Image (cartoon, rainbow, N blue to C red; front, top):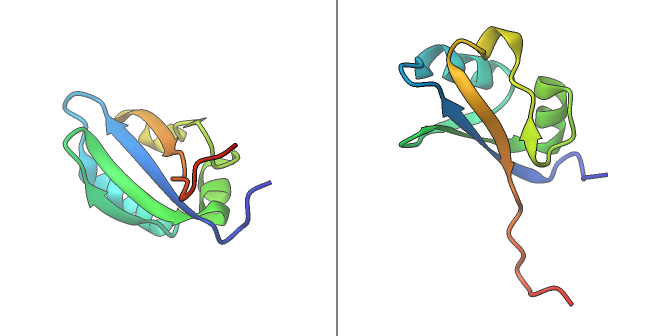
Length: 87
């Protein structure tokens, strides 16, 4: 299980014509910092925020909450970068 305070980055891909404003507001209310991307938004927070907001472990593709489905196509966690090669 991931450490609760471990930093996570979540990419939120908007639907064509999706409005980023309500999505940004929702993410901020769930303790994420939000930055714009070409395809949508980058939300940063910790593992606990991901679990609380999306009801899922902070890895891979996340479920799109019902209130965001009109604007959001896909939500996925950016894998953490490794500082050293494994193996």
